[in-house]
Length: 120
Image (cartoon, rainbow, N blue to C red; front, side, top):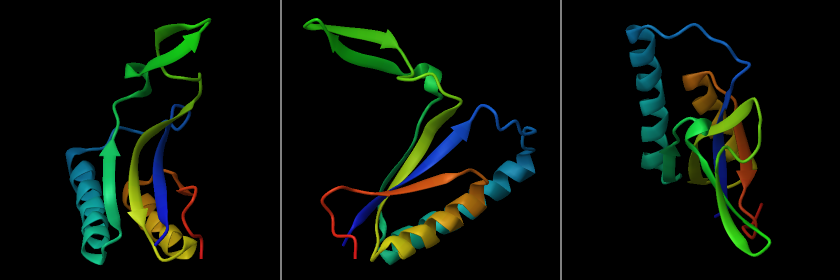
């Protein structure tokens, strides 16, 4: 079965009012329902939430030397905030699940298949 990454992106240009405690509770509740659906259907493989992009460290080789610099890797107004690794029958099933995640958290979701997996 093909694997997909559902990337949760944050955008510095997307200025929102801070959520109230109740709005935060409702958002977590909606997301919990979607995550339980992923797990009970066997689609969920792994997920993770990331700290803000300014906590990143970039490791690279330059002139044979390993260098580390404070991140993020690129200066951008959008950053990866978290992700889900899922297995789905096809792209349509992955997109359907992504639509539920974006509805639950009101944040864009990028869906990408893993290379080397069958895209039926």
